[in-house]
Image (cartoon, rainbow, N blue to C red; front, side, top):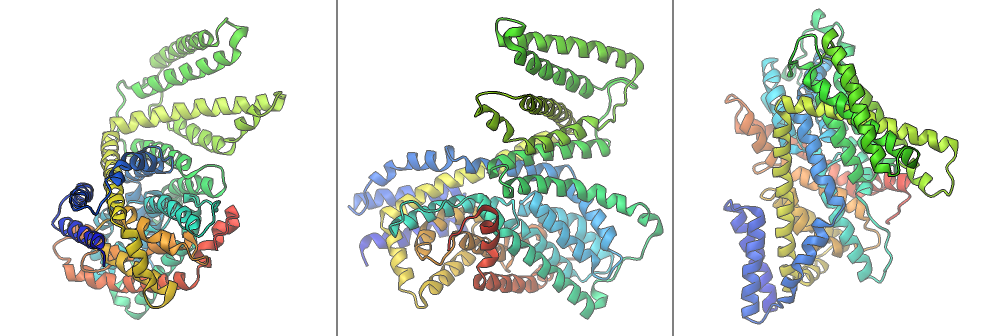
Amino acid sequence: MAIAEYFDIAMFAVACIFLMMGFPVAFTLAGVALIFALMGFATGHFDMAFIGNIPSRIFGGAVWNEVLIAVPLFVFMGVMLERSKVAEELLETMGRLFGTMRGGLGLSVSIVGALLAASTGIVGATVVTMGLMSLPTMMRRGYDPSLACGSICAAGTLGQIIPPSIVLVLLGDQISNAYVDAQRAVGNWSPEPVSVGDLFAGALLPGLMLVGMYMAYQMIYAFVKPNSCPPIPADPDASRGLAGQVMHALLPPVLLIVAVLGSILAGIATPTEAAAVGAVGAILLAGLRVQELDMERPLVDNAPSTEAVISRLAGAAIGGFILFMLAGDALFANPWISGIVGTVVGVLITAAHLFRKFMGGLDNGSNRPIYVAAASLAVMLFVSNFLDTIIMKDEIAVTDLIGIAICILATIGLAWGMLVALWRVWGAGILRLVNRGTMEISSMVFTILIGAAMFSLVFRGFGGDEAVQEFLLGLPGGEWGMIFMVMVVMFILGFFLDFIEITFVVVPIVAPILLQNDWVSPVWLGILMAMNLQTSFLTPPFGFALFYLRGVAPESITTMHIYKGVIPFVLIQIIALGILAMNPWLANYLPEAIFGTKFS
């Protein structure tokens, strides 16, 4: 073994030791990389030119990467929905809907976990929310503590695999780069591009299969041990209007999921654009919830609230500016002057109208602006490619002018509703908390990305990628032996590292080697890795989901209750992993059917 390979092994071991000691991940990876680079340079076993590639790797891999813009947007969407109590309303409503059947509360936890996974994608927030809301209710209704804890932990980790998932966004970026490297290594200089949308489509069937397996286990458990999950006695008063309550709680998140995921799968929007749609939809939904929870107060009784005044003036200013600017030279010599005049005219007319309303009174609780904004967002999704088509034409027909007018009206409606919703969540103190949470999580992700990029470059500078390739090729079992070993290593690392570190450190090293085999689909490999990490986060004694639940569970729930409860779900995960490994079509079918991409 060459001396440089000893540096690789020592660098990896030292990084793991410092991480287990509790040092920050990003600074540990970057610090260990720099120290070993200096040691290697001093002994003549490292070329410092690799260090010179760090700025281009950081800017090319993070700063200029449009795919990764989706990360803070999806984080914002998830935190906004969690802070605006959408999850709580879902849990309460689903509990009333399924609670009267044996094991119904467990089924409702799985369903809500899948919905929250598709709308938030943040495992810690989902486990904590469901632990705070569902666990006390399940204990009060006589549920077996182990079953309750296992159901909550398993449902909470679905955010790893069900799209739109932050894990899949990061994995999609790394798998795409690895696939290009692998194909170039075997002589294919024009490989089929792999997108995050491919991974989103590929994860749908395995994710739904996993939810179905969870629910099947809970129903079998309820049949075998009926006393462990008793039904909730029917309450005639609570059942009145239940259908309306279910629609009220279920319809908005489902529509948001359809808007985000559907726009990607339909080819209307890229994942980054769909993430922006999700962030806007989350703000509108939070604005509705804040109003319904009576978290705002009008400043003057029977008069327009400050929110109403600002939103109407802003809407009038935007509309006047756009309409007058489109008139252009017909009104003034400069279109910008026309736009400014239009802004002034719109504000003055609206101010006069508001003064009359102030004297006559106005309903402060109106959600009409938000409903208009939601409808405008839907319209804009369907006509998103319309203006591009018009720009390519030499002449504009009357029908094109109608389309442009629709786009303008939709823009005005969306701006009006967004201002109302933002005013409400800001007044309720939610916006500040959401912005801070988004900033903290996004900063963590990109700081780890920088540290992992430095670690990966130094590791390759010592010839680590070649050593890993030789090790994997020397394993018995051929390609299956390599895949099995990689999955075992990632599973073990999942006990100690978050998925972000594993994605940025391990995937760039091992994925290019595995993807050099023609039959290994990058989509299938990415989904297999995501489900493997999900299993790791659920497995005792170090699974992150177990720690999240332990932090919010009451003292009557012991750690052994949690460990015992998740073991059946871990076995379900392993069975699902085996099914996915033996049936790659589960991950490949939808990307091929929707996007026409065929990787194997």
